[in-house]
Image 1: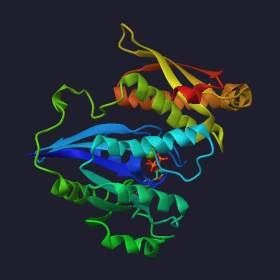
Image 2: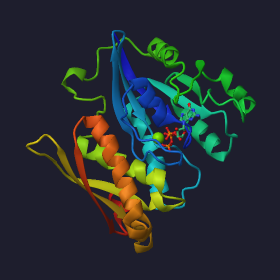
Image 3: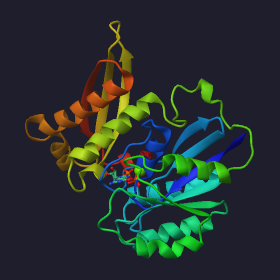
Image 4: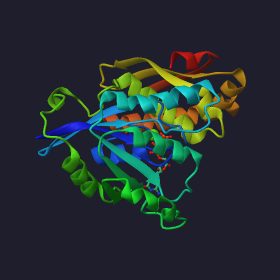
Length: 286
Ligand SMILES: Nc1nc2c(ncn2[C@@H]2O[C@H](COP(=O)(O)OP(=O)(O)OP(=O)(O)O)[C@@H](O)[C@H]2O)c(=O)[nH]1
Ligand SMILES: [Mg+2]
């Protein structure tokens, strides 16, 4: 039996969370076209007859740390190494140029003592490509694998390579007692994340970075439906009115998309009561 902890590292938006969901064939981590979607390390278990892998999806590392949220998220990515990782997946996006963020991320990856796999993501996109800028990495990494997390292309090859580098060890957790693969997220947190994902999708420019989301109540009613009460918390009133939108249009859109996804995930009818409030200090509680 093989087992171990595998950290997924890369600059924002390269597709780390999409990759984790693709490997697990289960959504545990939210994704969006905007950078800095993931805000905390998400741990999830994969298991088959070869053994057990605990994946840690990390927030993308970004160079500009001029606001408190960015600073905290950067620290979270580095904290994943404190878990004592057995393998690092360094994910790069060949469709984007290398930049200062990429160099900073590589610097962190280089500090890890574990074996490292270079995962070149978005292989479904042929143009534009900056693949030549990543060529120099080939000597540094134990293996290089081209994947498309979106189309799930090459996931079995990636899993084969991961198992190859993991140590012979007994499983770290008892997967049979877990209802789903996520280890450090309960259903309330997952619901809040789905709401935040929809906010990232529908809100423009800096608004998604001004907010967080909290689930207050999840009640299963006698008829089997779920009643969920949740809040979006934002740092300023001007953001609050943008999140609510004209005649409540925006909050309705976010709420409807979240409700639909939660209905699909749970197989239950969902009532979602979603409100918006202002708290300029929410980042301090993160
Ligand atoms: N075309 C294509 N798009 C992808 C692929 N993988 C991810 N994406 C897209 O890239 C964007 C970012 O994906 P995420 O998984 O949220 O990226 P991330 O690295 O987790 O980003 P942060 O959490 O912000 O660090 C999303 O719009 C994904 O749909 C891929 O293989 N091909
Ligand atoms: Mg992510």
